[in-house]
Image (cartoon, rainbow, N blue to C red; front, side, top):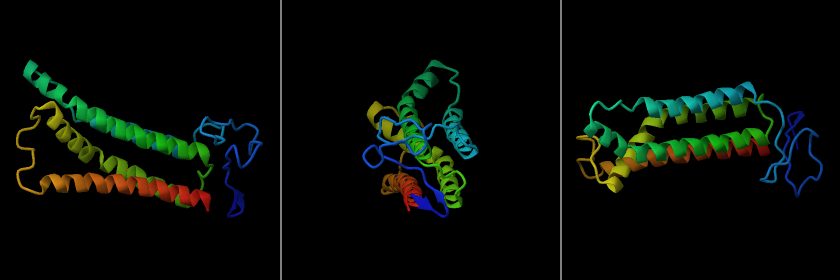
Length: 181
């Protein structure tokens, strides 16, 4: 595929039999994955994802009593869901950069930067939503006074989460559209 005077390296098992570059291994997903080391953009992105997970952990206070430990353990389910969401976004991000060799593309850099900003911004709303939702299943009240007190606050909370979720996957769609044009 040619784009702006350079080739975008993308191949599937069905479309191209030989690898675009002999050093690229064929992945289990049917795509040829470039075989070189991560670029500076990928390394920076990995650091941002790692920092977002760190923010999830930093917000945890060390319990001083057994009762505080029980409350912290009740929040473990929310932490696990938040961690899984960030891990899922990181994995999609990793696959994108393994499939496409677009480290120097300005559009990719901007879209990636917006995505990373969104990941960092939504760490606390993500943890808040999942921790509060998990208290419904665990049956404990983790934070006093945090539950929605007025009608509509729960809906507003889910709209905030849904907006971040949709925005993240819209950015991935734009990154893939940019790579495939």
